Length: 316
Image (cartoon, rainbow, N blue to C red; front, side):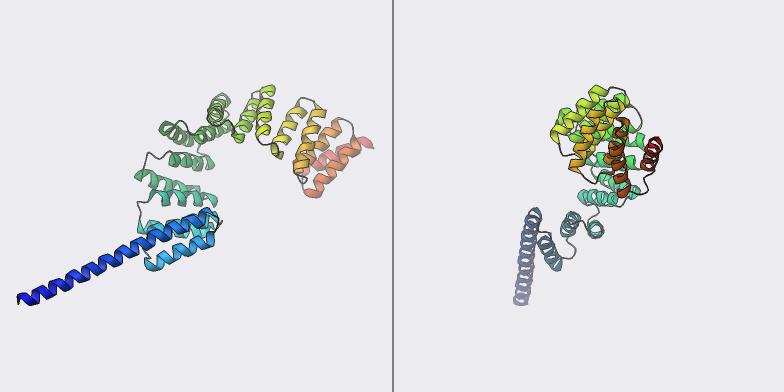
């Protein structure tokens, strides 16, 4: 009897050991494939990364981390629907994974599904309210829904958690700009560029706000700073040209618009405003060429039609 019990016990121990070894090997293989997949991802070899994650899921279809990593890879490939599906699978298996909620929210925003994104951010914040990125991104989603005051509260929370992250300051500045609270917006942009002096968008938007306050010289200084950092930005050259146009400095305006067109020869607005500037300089033939080019690029652009008609009427 004792002999039979010993044999049964030995058999049970052997089975448990076998299960332990198989589990250990399986865990080692999964970790190895995750690591390999991430390495492929970092090299831009997304298909190879997906193959690694798929191999893991053959071993263990309920391995949430592999589904999460698939979602990240699909996102980098621009396959947002596949990414969403992967994050859903990850969250079904592990509903307490903050990163899956966070990335799902970001992906939903790409489809303009801001309400759904906010729900995801809220789920993530219930799990980790100390993650400043979640508050910042929730603020962005609220801003896109026109809920500016709620957005500001989120940015404030993000800044409270980490005041040294420039993006929340910048985003708060944008919302304040939209609310026409220009002085407060400038304070936020100043914080942003103090934290990252190479943040082109912050310099540009600070310039726009200064222009709204009638501080045109300071506005131009901001655009110059932005162009120093990003000289091939056609939009900034265009807007700088418009500042000169407003100040009747047509030669300077023309120079800026020419630079914009050199960078982007298909820039409709640059052709249009160049036509307007040339008209102000009474170079009507050249103005007509620019306005004609504008209408070639966009036949339905009404301001160009009106400007062209006005010049032709003046000539006749």
